[in-house]
Length: 244
Image 1 (cartoon, rainbow, N blue to C red):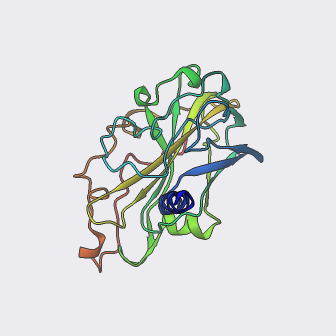
Image 2 (image 1 turned 90 degrees about the horizontal axis):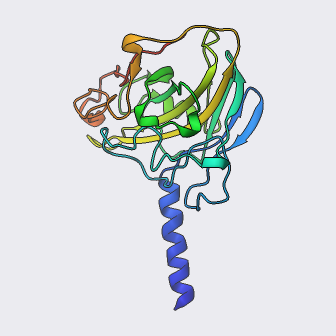
């Protein structure tokens, strides 16, 4: 009986884990970094990534923890940051990602000091990369997430070369929209120390907050792709991309 219960529990856990996921590791300017390991205690873990506790999505675009996932906490003295020159490439690696319908979005936020002691929900975020519906129609086309899966479950972005140095978060987010009118948000955050001689900073409409960036009334968030089989355009939610 105990063996049967244990096997059933393992099977349930495997089913849940296989259904969704998140960013497990990074390559930043050629250096590899491990991510936080969800479903494990934060005690004893050290990573550039903020804590995230579940492979399951956030489904409310106004969730208080949308910035860096549940629970998005600092690892305290074990929290690390990756030092990276502006203009460098950042590659995030997911688990075997199961969804191919929906956009990929990458944000950054200036911590205006030490990111380890920053509250991500209080920061102003700007988008540095995105990919939505690349070709075809809403239900059957090629999406950013499809490209991510085809590229070994990874996504590479470039930090704007003119970005002013400082401590920043980088936030990778997948928005799965394969279920009608039920968005699934998968955000993860990592800490960076950006170096270089740049002086540029975004301003105005390039900034947003989490929560605050999205609502169910956004055409790219509360969407039924199957009721629009011939539509070949999609509005990626959030602000425009800031390129420096």
